[in-house]
Length: 368
Image (cartoon, rainbow, N blue to C red; front, top):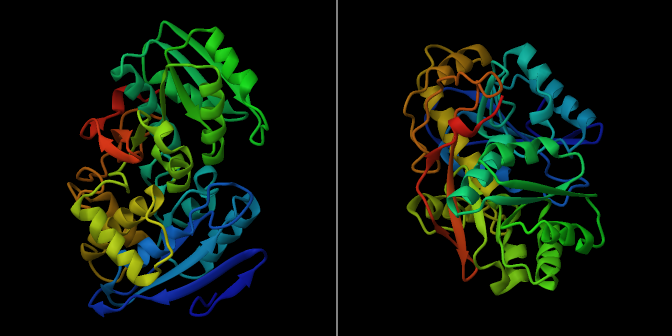
């Protein structure tokens, strides 16, 4: 497989560039994720983020693969990584987290949005882990009667929310992904006299949910992962978003911090239209960890030597994207490779996130 020019493999687009300037041992990074596809949440911006992280580093080839949220396209991406000599994969939101078996068999390390058990995984973000943080955050906010609005088929995320706290009551309302009206579902939560509502939905559904909550005149805490609070959602909701609790596993892209300023400047220099999102921030931080590991490789960089170097990372810095990173497995068998097991809570004020907490450890909230 040649990645130096754009080629098509089935429905999957693969392309490549080479980072330049300061010296580095040569190696190839694949950036995979759902850049396009049927989901309302896509992450093409992670490519720009990784390129920004590698600006000034020479000898590193960056190739990309769009899995389009398809199992077959994801497998094509994984095969392309193996046949194309990829040494490490940075995976954003997409299908890879559900099945990275080909990469595991080939011994190619995967970082960012990965599964939390494979020996080649380095999970920076984890759906279940982050959703456990929603439960933790709502308990901190004083909620004891929990309501959950969830998309059909995402019960594992709801279970993670429930596992994040101790509750007097739990009421769940499931909806199809394309539900035209959320009024009956919100009415069910209102009848249960919930004190808070956790949203496990897609970005567009947040707006629908808030319309129904307002119609029911519900005065409740509302919490969700910050990834679904896109700039478009916040803009559409305006002041109705004030008071939302958002949970993040890395520093929020909307907060004014030095590292977000650095990421923003780097991404805009490459692609001014590329948004700085939670996915972009995580991808940038993941790229920095890969760079740290590469510097510790003795000899040529290969998947095996990169895997060994990444397993050896201790207190590695991402300039504040996440807490110091150490690849020390957890004892929980379902989360052995969840290395960034931390969360930070934000509250939305005037359309922007404001920190409620510093980073805190989620380990005790993670259920097997």
